[in-house]
Image (cartoon, rainbow over all chains, first blue to last red; front, side):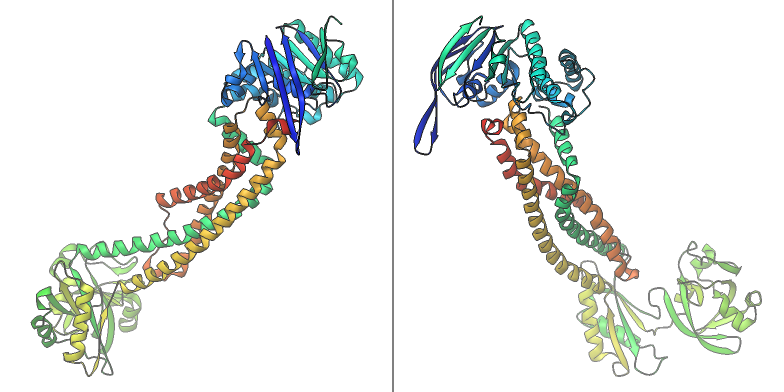
Length: 225
Length: 396
């Protein structure tokens, strides 16, 4: 479970301060499938960075699984993210000169796991996203949809509580988008908490719960759309 | 992340850009190779010098003074009067013994009568049974007893035998006068670099030797400097020696040549070290430059690694180790090239000194240590820049 209380964040642009997030309060339970929607510049990505433990430079408090994330040291914070959050980015963010399997194994490598264990877990998640035979190819040789599935595999290889996706279908055509949403729905069915940021209404409505952000504030929070 | 994995990652990254990696380490290779070359030659010279000192320590410490006559070729130069002169001087109590010798090391020259011909013969004295000429053509070599008692036997060179006796076979058993002593020919041998035209036992030489000769050998007492005494004796003889007006006295300084090479080498070492230091510094800046380029090219990769769980120190170490592997490889290649250059360089030093290029463990440690240190020092700033990158900015 994650709990955001009174989150405020502002950027300084030149001499003017710009508040991008204003008094955000939010609770997301385990196993939920949430979409966060808003126009570009609404602050939805900034919010997602905070939820996904990439950004800890904000006012307010954020507890994930009962742990105050602000109390962690920088190293602990990194480790905490590595173990609890899986990230999926819009443009996949795969390392091109590493094989698909090495890309997926990277989070486990930074945990210090043994190569044999890593190989086993990587193969397991490759099966899960339907790319069982693509481990030894390079990302650039795969289609956009396949690359995004590799990214999802990398996000779930550590078996995190939460999978966070920032515009996961933004770089994909509609047919591939459906493929990826199917993968996400399978993950949700297995009990993973899913948080997806999108500006695509068609994607957003597939979630259980939709949170709308406008000018840094929560404008709507609806279950069972 | 395990250290082994960090090293593997660094290797992988270097392999992505082999040409650039090679270009970057050329400076390191040159710097290290220059230093190793001069050190390998220096080691060789030192090794040579110490082995010489050791060998002269085994026996008594000698100083040898030679006499070269101005015109009369048969003038031997030293007389008993010269020996007395030195013994009664202030050098007397520093010298344990003075010998007049016609030998220069083991080689001598004397008047010989072979058959009816009188000629000058170069000869060598024999000390050991084992040091026989490599190729005996007729007869035999001395046995141990003959060497020990100084039997008046002689071996002569094939060509000499043929000239005076017709064939080598016919020379055997014939008699030869060398100096004032008659010798019996017991063998002949093929021409050889080591030996003169004839070989006689050393003990036989001693028995026959008169008290005149072209060489004066001073046995120096323990704790005295043979070089100093040799020089002093030379000065004394030039002033008061018996034949000072008929020729020149000269002290043979066996260490002089080594000393000269050492001096040249010391000067050269300083110069080469300076060049190498500059080369390593410039190479270091090259490494830094390449690492900065690499860091900025791989910003995305750094961001991804940070996002999936790399700590800042993971990233810093990865780039630091990359730089260090690069420069350490440069150091090893430099070590190899330096050794090759040194083996070529020693070929230009006169052969008789037997100087070889020598690489010690110290040199290996130096090459690897210095080159790795260059990587550490010049890789630090780029690595830190990589580690300090703002994750949010990269992933945006």
